[in-house]
Structure formats: C-alpha cells, structure tokens
Image (cartoon, rainbow, N blue to C red):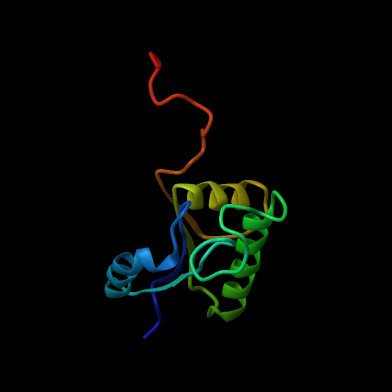
Length: 122
C-alpha cells in the first residue's frame, strides 16, 4: 500500500525522537510513514549536550536527512516536516534558507522569537 506521505519529525530543545512515539503511531494509523532523529547533542546522538560545533549544524543535519528521504521516497509521495519548539525553528530556517525542499511544513509552538517577552507588560 502506498503511504499518504512521509513525515520527518524535528524535535525540540532537550528532547529526543523517542518522545514522539505516540505522534508517530497516530500518523502511521492515518497512513503516513514517519521518521525521527536526535539532534546533535540530544538523545542518542553524538556531541556535547547543549553545544554545537557551528551555528548551522542543526540545519545542515536536517538538510542531509531530507535529501536522504527524497532519495528513498517513491515519486509523488509528499514529504512533510513536523517541527516542535526548537525543531520548528530548525525546520522553518531550513525551508526559509532554501536548504530543503518539502511538500509541507507543520510547526508546533516554534521557537521563532526567542528574545521576546511572553507578554507586553513584562
């Protein structure tokens, strides 16, 4: 059976891909193939926790994964990014910079304005 699409989950700060198992199961039930990964310095990945070797490391890693996903997908199967919090920032940045080509971008509480106050009176 041909999948409805492939969803690549991009997790948030201090998280790991395993935290999205329940999301993956739901998406699977709806006919989507799901893949997750751990950012550099998170979960089971290499790297010092909370540190990046260079500013674009997370976007570079995502670009590599998207390229790999495109090679493995059947033509016509849409590729979607689902980014939460910091993962939303990484996914949005990769798309905005033209580093990745995807068919859909889903952002859950993306960390787009990290320097702003949560309310105007704060």
